[in-house]
Image 1 (cartoon, rainbow, N blue to C red):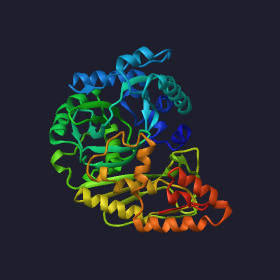
Image 2 (cartoon, rainbow, N blue to C red):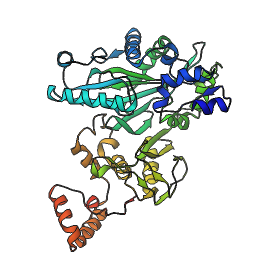
Image 3 (spheres, rainbow, N blue to C red):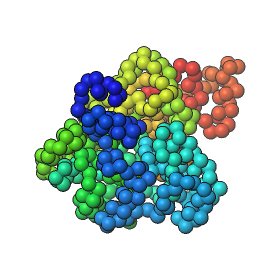
Image 4 (cartoon, helix red, strand yellow):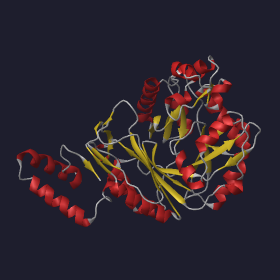
Length: 437
């Protein structure tokens, strides 16, 4: 990448989101050639991820924002049992660089602590992160809220409507909506009143996403991410502001020209990731060739995908196949538009999370504003979502198909074994050629 940047005589590199966006090594190499790196402030300041985590928490506390009970960051990891007891179980084991569901594990009791720590360290090694961890108290029923912000070098800033990322699996956001239907007027006002001091204290220039846990009575600071976020298009669609363009402008030293009263905030956006994972097999990766792919379209629907029919999904990269966003005047209409889009999205050849997402949109907890960030922590909850996928008529059809399949020796034992363990009829009859709809 550095070689290509030099040969093309560029004056700046935008790394997108992912591993490279947080790479101190890439930042240094580009700087050696006089090329700007549109990256987090901590890289320019020379702070490691471990140092940065303490810095962020300290600034949050000074700004009057509560933080969860947590330990220091440990680089020389020995016995953390004492630290864990001080915080109390359940707790999270996190690497300071934890992001996108990587390098984070829950320990519900002392017996799970070492396994969780070892798992996080292995992931740090795999992804090239600093091998350090800290412990943080787990909230059992939080909502995960992010506020996108822009700030220029002169200190002028603007705060955008929040994103709700409460629909997660393995700490990875699968569905995002904006604005959050869970955030009360009082909680929103409390956060908005403290954000300017936090933003100024951090010295952000460009873009940042500031994350919080929200409970019925409390607001807790989680993290600040200064790399462009995967779901930044939600803000673009809701407000009409090109966040990526503004980030580049501000990093180049240009002033923030946007005014708060000029930003559109009416309506609602629902967005989902479609991943190459099998929800019927505990979200196991499902790489392979996409035999056929049909992308939906319609008013208020935006689909972003690098894949087309005939492409091969590699097991070596992110599992995201497509991102779908639906904008409408109300949350209910946006959900309806998304349901229609997912019903018309076709992928043949590999398993995807399409059925799971359809189940979420139909789930009573999601529709009635009772969903929480830990909803998908247990397999029983996953099954509950998957059971919401098909109509009674579709279930009857699946039962007939399964009954017919019982007449063949090759399928009978598999179907009966799965049925005895509560397997889903559609999952039992997927066969070798997979069709997701």
